[in-house]
Image (cartoon, rainbow, N blue to C red; front, side, top):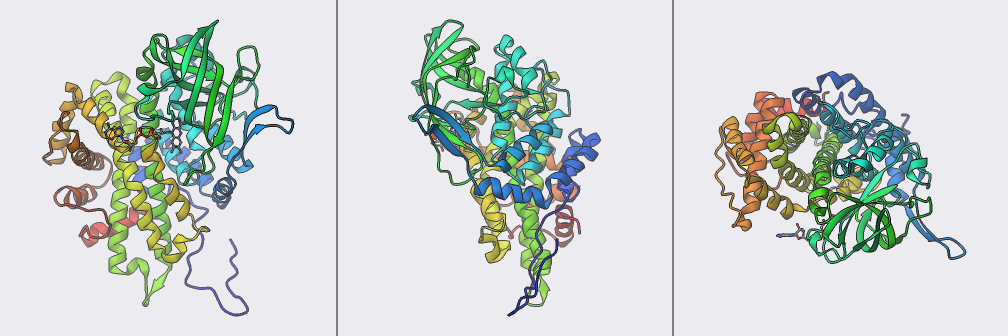
Length: 538
Ligand SMILES: Cc1cc2nc3c(=O)[nH]c(=O)nc-3n(C[C@H](O)[C@H](O)[C@H](O)COP(=O)(O)OP(=O)(O)OC[C@H]3O[C@@H](n4cnc5c(N)ncnc54)[C@H](O)[C@@H]3O)c2cc1C
């Protein structure tokens, strides 16, 4: 890229060139190692092609455009007839097209709605992680689409019709019945005004009506409203129940979903999140009446993995931007990268990303193997809320620190950092907020298989789990889950990274208190060099 540096009045120098036209896979050694350690070594060449495609200047420019031009709701047409359509910028459609072609919405499923064989989860997680570094808003409908099939397993006849349509690699953005389209996407509506966590308080009602149900009520958050169908919770005669609500009724007419407005959000701006009313909307039941929470939880486990993977991706891009800048920029006669305190900050941050990647991909491997291995199933059950809690909570503070490495340039909209920063908190809030994840860990530990994992992890890392997991003592849960997250991360690092890195993680995070800030971990010089070279090879 040609950059004009000489102006009439001054010359621009000592500034880093844009961080673009990179291979997001080849430039990321921790990612390559995590992919290899978790059973997807054979996918490296394909992932590198994906990494090159997503790391181009054009893709970063499209990411900016998709977020600078947020979607618009057209509730009515000029004559007052209802439209209930959302219009997206072409850049958003471009991302949907590219990501669906790569299978981000469904590559972990077969056309008959069964789990694809290993390493489908790890492979997809690697793509999801790289895509999240460039544009995260469009990943919302993709994560929901892939996860919804898990809940639809409770309605085999529906699954048999929907799965073949979902697994196609076609993005069909036209507004028409899903059975006439070449591909479809799925969303989810659980949260109501009076409660998102406690969905038992849902007041939306579903009454049996012909081949399905008629649903009346409202959802306070329902993202990606141009999906072709939504998994929705509503109170049926037999209790809270899961439904599949299509945008078009079986006779082809438009279903009664009335979008009230789109949320004006902190970040995630390329994605639309609606408030919606159901005015007697048609829906099919998914699972038994009264089993709504149990049914939809099958979906949520998968979206929670994606939250952790995407947050790790946001951290990775923030770190890469910071390192790239510091390698170019000089202060006081030295590259920032060679200033001892900046090296300490960058190396400590690189260690955090190493651990987040190791844990997220270890979890993806557990999902790959859960159906045939009880230990892996227990790992997936216990570690999904642990990883979702820990990695998503780390991301906002991490991105802020990376922003500061770029100085004032990092605070300015033309840099990627403000968007990464605004994007970071949402993964902790949706799909089960922080406290809710910790409560879920307590629930998982009530089962002997999951509880037995504590001793295994402690042994693998030679680290005592010196906290109490006490279902009665919820007030202690964050301390306990935080410690468990550190130990699980250390164990995952021991499998996928050089020994010095796992050791540095244990020394700086488990043997002593790390604190919230980066740069005080007292990592030795050789390990620092190793971390920095792995994070962004020179
Ligand atoms: C951008 C965006 C998009 C969204 N898209 C969707 C969507 O597509 N579909 C959908 O259904 N929802 C969606 N949501 C809603 C989201 O899932 C909810 O906001 C979330 O589940 C929290 O629910 P709430 O907002 O009602 O908060 P509350 O449930 O009131 O929770 C508030 C806080 O209390 C904590 N808390 C709850 N229970 C306990 C407890 N027992 N002990 C201690 N602390 C507790 C929670 O951790 C949270 O921090 C979206 C949200 C956002 C921000």
